[in-house]
Amino acid sequence: MRITEIKSLLHALSAYPRKSLGQNFLHDNNLASWIVQKLEIKPGEHVLEIGSGLGALTEQIVLLGVSATLLEKDRTLAKYLRERYSMPGVEIIEGDALDYDTRVDFLRRPVKVIGNLPYYVSSAILFHVTCEPCPFERMVFTVQKEMADRLSADSGTKDYGSLTLIIQRRWRVTRLKTLPPSVFLPQPQVDSAVLLFTRREPRELEETDAMKFSELVKAGFSERRKQVRKLLARFGEADKIELALREAGLRPAVRAEDISLKQWIRIANILQPIVVYGGEPGELLAVVDENDRPLAPRDRATIHRENLLHRAVHVLLLNRHGELLLQKRSYRKDRFPGRWDSSASGHVDAGESYRHCAARELQEEIGVTAPLVELAKVPASAATGHEFIQVFGGIHDGPFHWNQHEIDTGGFFPIKLVDEWVAARPVDFASGFVECFRSVKPALAKMAVIDSAEKR
Image (cartoon, rainbow, N blue to C red; front, top):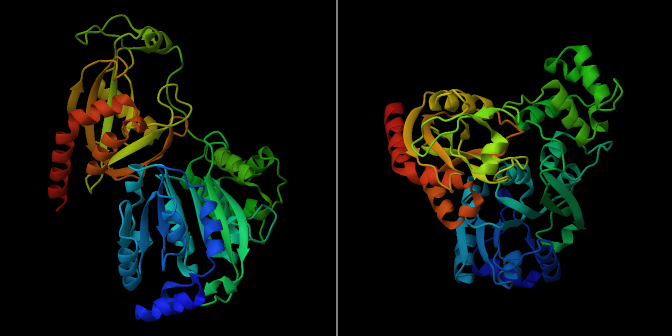
């Protein structure tokens, strides 16, 4: 869309660029096409566009024939988009991007994200769309050059900081192009830049607790001129901090900006080590007959190899909003790696009760305790992995501490959304969870209603 066309359209809409919304309209069609190409959209994918404006990027997206969700905060422009892109597969949402529930996009994966982000709120939007649980794998954003410098910075540079590390721990950030003010109307006072975000592979970096990592790097960059060992005093004694620095291959007098992402993760895991729970490969588990009566215990490997009937528990936690906590299994798991599963689950040890096992798994996997009630007993089958499963329910709002050797990430989801997700994409879940969830949906809904009434 040319400058004259933009001006004419704004005049026809009785609209004008609103500084309060950070509106700067891209008027270079070739550039818009190039930006959309970098998203590498494939047939069958869905695109989420943030801040569609007058549709410079939208026009290029719809030409590819994929479905899309367009977010636009300006009421006049949202109305225009509804009229201009009234077609199957295109949804227009009028509202703030920070209010958009990204969890719905788990139902329509793969979903890619694109947008020309308003300068004043770009960091908030980036944290919103990258926070876990996150359904996205690839994103292309245009942001203020200064923000781009920080997001894509390398260690040892002035732009490198806590924002860099928090984003780059989960995402590879690649600077694609710098844009001059002249490609926008009205022209901003500074240059912009196009960034590509691609999600890191599970094995790419050492696992670490996200919350603890963020706390550590924020402390490390709280006073850039100071040595990092002095800024990390609240995370341990001086000797322990110096040991962590040496273990990461650093000198004691190092400053925060000279520590790489991998080294920051190493320091975090030394100062606040991940507690690893769980038995040894040879641990004895409860083996049972077809009526769930105990037989001679056997080791885990033998049970799985010979498909012996055994016992397991699944715990489903709800928060005060009636949302269900799900965990995404670690890539390390021998069964269903990377799949979504119950809040906590595990095998019943030989001589252990179902209830004791449920409490133990809750503590070991997500670091909490909660009163539990029995919801259902799921019979053993191929879908459950030949496990008799006792399903327990409970209420807990967190915070949770994921066992990083067991869990990649997790989060709360509305029960209705989980139901639709399981129906649309059952392959996203461990099969045992699907059996459990289908068995306890009514009980979960009832539990959520009772808890909400008690809190009122």
